[in-house]
Image 1 (spheres, rainbow, N blue to C red):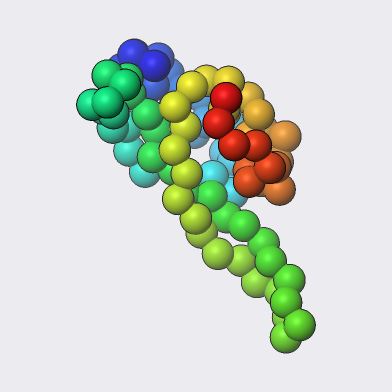
Image 2 (cartoon, rainbow, N blue to C red):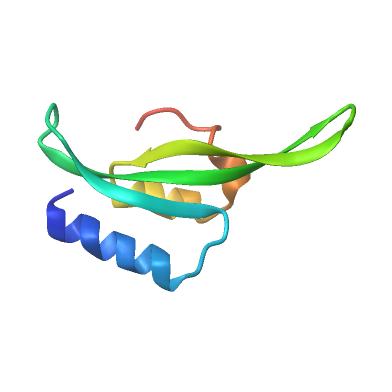
Length: 82
């Protein structure tokens, strides 16, 4: 993404008031020469002793990844790469 596209995506995410996703910052990936969003997302878990939640790091490199994420945090780990 170029910087303008990354900034627009951040605004769109903030306007939707998504409780399980927080954008921390926009960074330039020097390898791909493209901007990415560094985010944290909340993941729920269930264990023998009870349930809880943790925050994990996540990069969003393309707007398409954001579209996929809107289907819910449970899908975050189900797709790798492209």
